[in-house]
Length: 288
Image (spheres, rainbow, N blue to C red):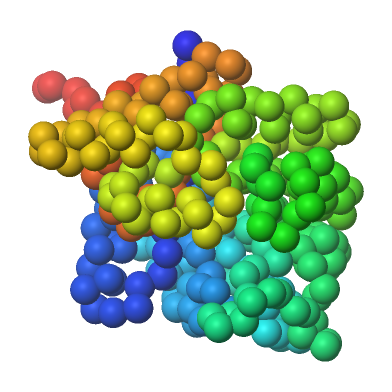
């Protein structure tokens, strides 16, 4: 089985302590030679400047290929494209284009009167600049705003028709969830890369709440498994085994790329990558 190509997602820090954690995360994972790393955008665009600073610093200090998240939330078309132009001027050539979540306290996303209505419009505008490789989100389980799973496949196809180069999925807990989605995409004529998003479970309670918010189905057996593991002090071992097995199953089915949502906690992601054969390249100096 071939060693997978990996990529990592980070989020921008909001405090000095969080800054130290981000840089330690990047320092620990950069030696695994990711194809790219991405930096998220807070709900409602709340981390717009922090995202820009993190993207440019990671690219400059670590030499990584950095993709900036960019959303349609609470900004005019001109403001959004100005942010993209700033990235291009800083040498950033990768963007993850998303509609974005509604600002805190607002139930549903509503486009800015002078902004992009959705991710399809954003993708088309970014590709028209000729500056960027554009990745988009994909949902192997129904998006909270989607009427059914078929709608997510149709919407993804529209993003690719608008010019998207690849997609990264929301996380999921069972390999079959992604494999069914991949088959549905192929049946719909989608032939561009759809990369599975992987969430190493650092904290089961937090992961479960996150899953509920984004519509990811939680297998019943996982609750019982983590409850027992927490009693026995083996949560980390269980999380590593579950994530490694999920990735191994995907690789056995022909998946070549894995995108890890690190939550700026690198240890488990690094351990899983090592188990999959993704290890730092070591250069042995010639002995005189």
